[in-house]
Structures are given as structure tokens and as C-alpha cells.
Length: 321
Image (cartoon, rainbow, N blue to C red):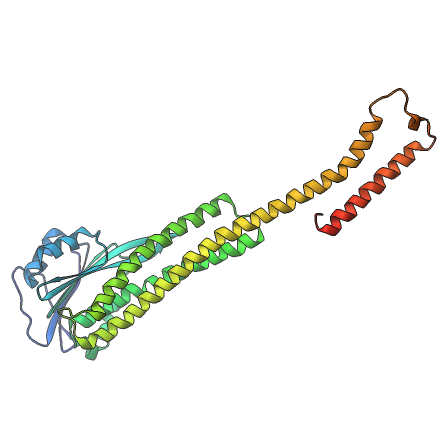
């Protein structure tokens, strides 16, 4: 059975368990049903559909598990799709939470989410005055829970990128590190494409007149919208950091290569002096007056040392060595 929890709440307190059944149920005023279900079967969704009169298109989307974040209106009910995210190594894994909201019911359907709503349910049950306001406050709690799950993902990726940046400033980045950075960049871009629609979803719940959403609840959704925008800002900053790591790595590598090139050129110029002089004396001409000089060997060696020392001093002074 994939039903995690199914209860009737009366005056903000858990009253009784609600089993899945065939046929429409009509909770009385002051109470609502909250059903949490994960990876449901078609039969389970068919029962929930008959219990609360859910729209067949919304039920189909909830069974699909591959929807983008959105808000849809079906008569006097809302259908909200939110994307969850968690890290698996350096990869961001995504799940989906579909939420059916009516005047007297909330049905949350999870696919692939790493964290259940058990702790969220306990937390909301500790505030019966808030829970007594109805399903729209439960919707707020679920969306706030989903959005809060984005923060550790971004923070962990940010710490990883900053650590790679520190390593890059010390030594050359290896091929695997560069590949890892590219993979993280793709993950961040994809994550940005998820958070953007989530901001639109919460923005609609905050600013539009929608069924099942009271005006008093909009302040709570506005708080969630602030959290989403904060996450968006962090993701944009993280993307800029990754880009700056690439650019700084290229600049440092070019600078290191330039330094090595200058050093090689300087040593080549210094070694060219004895090579040139030795080359002249190695031509084996028959008539070379210098060959008859008594101290010619020592003069040539001294000249080589002096010229090499002058070149070394000049290159050293200019920062090439």
C-alpha cells in the first residue's frame, strides 16, 4: 500500500483515520481530509478520484510523474505540481509532488522524493490554530517544505565550487576536475529551469484570485515566494562563480604558460652564447689566428662566462628568470 497517511482533521486537530473507499465523501464544515500518498497505483488514484471528485486530467498528470511546476484550476479545485530536489553525489535528483486542493480536502501525491511529509505533518499538527484555517494552509506548508529543500542543494554545490576554486588557485586543474565542473554547470542550469517555474507557481498563488485560497493565506505564500527568489538569486550567483572559475583557470593557465615560455626563451638566449662561440671554433678552418694565442682558451671561456652572466642578470632583473 502506498498511502502514507490519511486522516480527517477537525478544528485543526487530527480526528480519525480515513480509509480509501469508492464513492464521493463530503466532509462537514470545519473539517477536511489530508491524504498523503507516494508512487500510487492507478486503482488507488481511481479511489481518491471518486472520493473527492477529482478531475480526470489532473489525476492523469499525477500518475504521470513527469510534469513541470504548474497551477491549474478545475472548477472549485486546484491542482498544483511542485518539483523536489536532492543531491546524489554531484548530481541533482528531482522528484515531484502533485497536490489536489479542495475546500475540504488536500491530497499530496509524491514521486521520487527523497524526504517524506511525515515530519511536515507532525510540525503542522503542532499548530492546530493554523491548521484549522483549512487546506490552503496545508498547501502552503507543503510548498514551503519543498522550497526549503532547495537551500541545502545550492549550499552544498556552492561549497564544492568554492573548494575547487581554491584548488585552482594553487595548482593546475586536472582533466577530471574540469569535467566535474562542467557537469555541475549543467546541473545548475537545469536546476535554474526548475526553480523559475516554481517561482511562477507561488507567484500565482500569491497574486491571483484562486479557488480554495483565502486572502489571509496569501501572506504565507508571499513568504514562500521570497524564499524561491532567494534561491533563484543564489543559483544565479553560483552560475557566475562557476563561470568565473573557468575564466580564472584559463587566465592562470595562460599566465603560467607565459612564465614558462619566458623562462625557456631566457635560458635559450643564454645558452646561445656558448653555442655560437663554440660553433665558430668548431668550423675547422685552417687559418685561424686565434688558435695560435697562448691564452686564447681562457679568454674565450672568460668571455662566455661574462656574456652569460650579463644575460642572466638582465633576464633576472626583468623577471624572466
